[in-house]
Every structure is written in structure tokens, then in C-alpha cells.
Length: 515
Image 1 (cartoon, one colour):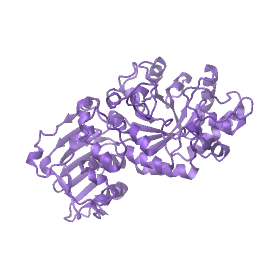
Image 2 (cartoon, rainbow, N blue to C red; image 1 turned 30 degrees about the vertical axis):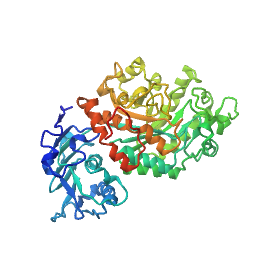
Image 3 (tube, one colour; image 1 turned 60 degrees about the vertical axis):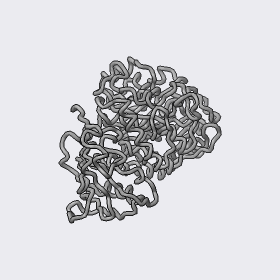
Image 4 (cartoon, rainbow, N blue to C red; image 1 turned 90 degrees about the horizontal axis):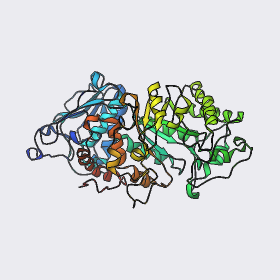
């Protein structure tokens, strides 16, 4: 990776030289860009005459950007053909010829007095560039009612591309159910930080959240429970497909998880034939783990698993289905291997690849499988061996990346089995050095899981996710050479007004000066 070149604020002029000082400059963007050169003398002001120019393939991103800008400005911000030059000020989205350095997810952004130009080789890159551009506007751009003020964007140039291809967030909808609109709200929030996968934890001991038409009682019975006896719920197949499509409109791929062979009590309460004695088990609404297991020796177990995989695969355009594999304490080692030897090949039948918790490495999965490392432990010989065989590892160590860990002992939400994880703790680590024997080129990327044992509302999700999610996003996107807590905390503070304008219920960590 090329060495990062950053020009920090103040090196190319300062606010005193510029009467239209802005809230954030190009070096304040989160995740921090590969290269950013501020030019405060070239600030651009959006007006009622400004248009967005976008060629055909870029128009969806142009319409998305216009949708962000219209509510607070009250301006029409029409999306016009890129070659409709005219004399109006413009934000131009240009697809193609952005250079080999930016690849298929990066972008180039140039803000001048006369307009804004955003170039990328793909629409994924354009969308990522829009996320950077929107941070350069005043935070009020995120309000939903018209604000009477100037809309000045900080001048400068950005060249940017990701460190890792996969930058994920996980939302557990099994322990507590979150309605489609709540999931979409979280999708919009994570998209701002160039997260490009949403891992939906759809099934667990406490609830089954996806309609499977060949096994209807999974939703009808297993979908009715949640932790603490709270109301359950499930997504119909149409609702799930709508979530998948909404995520795709934000350039996010959904990875559905069907956890197995453990974490299956909701399924076994729905169908007695999934138990070795043929009798349904009682529902569980506590938060204990490790007690459930599908019956490994029964043929119907594999009919059940294949039916679920078949229906979920048909609704999921992405390449991966997450097959769980963690905390299967009620499954013997031999049975665990037998189970995955039969189940993992089923995915290829439906043109999917496996993602799973890192425990699956003991089954010697195909190198196309992505083991997700979740343990706080700083060594794991089995995972290192899998990486050496060719498996790409997704890093989510619980004491760094789990967003449901308490910030401190007084945090009312969350758990603390992996420790207390303040904002600095979640940022101050490198996925390429966390596990001996697993190096940068052996990583698929990073993911920030959010488990919901203690979360009931969108406000709860936001409080635990923000500000830690943006730090995990930066670890996944920005070059390792840029990793610096003191500089990050200064940039993070400038995200606070954005989140306030968006109504995000974020944790105001005392480690950050939220002016």
C-alpha cells in the first residue's frame, strides 16, 4: 500500500485567512483518507442554483446525494446529465478514469470555488466519496427541516481507497427483535462510515427471525419469544428481501446468519423432530449459552438445514451465508465435525460460500470459507493454521470490536464478559498484529458485532454503537500508517454535531472533547 500523505489543517492557510470558515475540512473526514490536501481558499457554497451532474450509471448515487441535501437546504438540487454543462454551480459525479490507485471501492474528490468533482471507477466508489463529501457540509445539512444559513463546503483534494475489502457491522435481531424500519435506520447510520456488509444474526436460542416457508413453525412459534419475555417477531420473506434491497441501495451487502449446530433452542422448540428424543424443548428467554444442539445423527436435521439454506440463499444476492458454529458446547467434537462436513458443502449447491465464527476452522473448511475471529485471546493456533491454508480471516475480537460491551462499570446497557471497552480501547488495535500467525494479507477485513441481550430500542443500538463503530470503520478503511488515537479523537469530536443533527443517541465519552 502506498505511503499515506496527509496535510493537516493549518498547513495550507487557516480560518483567519478565510471568512467562510467551515466546521470540518478534508483532513477531518472519518475514516481518515489515504491522502487529503486542504485548500481553504477554495471553499464551495451550495446555492439554490446548484445542480448534481451524473451520467446514467451514476444517477442512483446522484439521487441519493440530492436526497441528503434537499431537506435542510430547501433547494431543488436537480440531478441532470453530466454533459449538461451550462453555467450553474454543480456537484459532478464522474464514473470511470479515476486511476488505478483508487481501485473499485475508492474515489477522488476535488472541492473548488466553482464546483465539486467526485470521480470513481465504480458506483461503490462514488457512494463512498459521497459519504466523505457530506461530512464537509455544516452539520445542519443532516436536519430534516429547512435551515436558513450558508452551505459552505471546505475546499481541498482527497484521494482515498480502503485498506480491507470487507468492513462490516453485525446486528443481533434474535435476542431482541428489531423491526424493518429500525434495521434500515441502522443501515443508513453505518453507511456513513463506508461499512459495506451488514451481518444479520437471524436465529438463536431466544428467537427465530426469518420466515422459512417449508418449515413455517420456525417463525410462528420460534419467532414469538425474546430475551426477558419481551415481544418477539420475525421478518416475512418479503420484508427480508426489502431489507436486503434497501441495504444494496446503500452499497451494503447483507450476510444472513443461521447459527448452528448450537444456539438452536428456538428451532428445537418449534419442531420436536429436530431433537434426538423427538420432543419439542421449552422456549428459552434467558441469556445462557452453550446448552442447545441439533441432533447430529438424524437425517431430518440435514433436510432441515438444507431447506433453510435453500430458502435463505434464494433471497440473498450476496456471496456469503453465515453458518454460525460458536459455543456448541452441547455438541461433541466428533459430532461437530460430522455436522459441518455435511453442511458446508450444501452452500455451494446454492452458489454460496460460508462465513462462520472462527470455531469452524477445526473442521478444515474450504479456503473459500471466512472464519470470523471473536475471541479476546491474543493467540489461536487453529486460526493461524487456517490462515496459512488460505482462509481469509475476518477480525472481530470481543474486547475490541464487540459494540455491546459496556464502556465502563456504570454503563447501564451491555455486558462485560470480554471486559470494559471504552472508545480508545476499541480504536487502539491493529487487526494485522492482533493474532500471531495472521498477517495483513491473510485478513478479509473487520466487523463490529452488536449483540442485543440488553438492547430493546434504536436508541439503545445507537448508544452502544456510536462512537465505537466509526473507529472500527476507520480501522477497516484507513491505512495502518494513519492510526493515531490523539488525531482520531480530535476528528471524532467533530462528528458529534453531525450525530446530534441526525438524532443519534451517542455515548459522550469523557475521552473525547465534544465541543
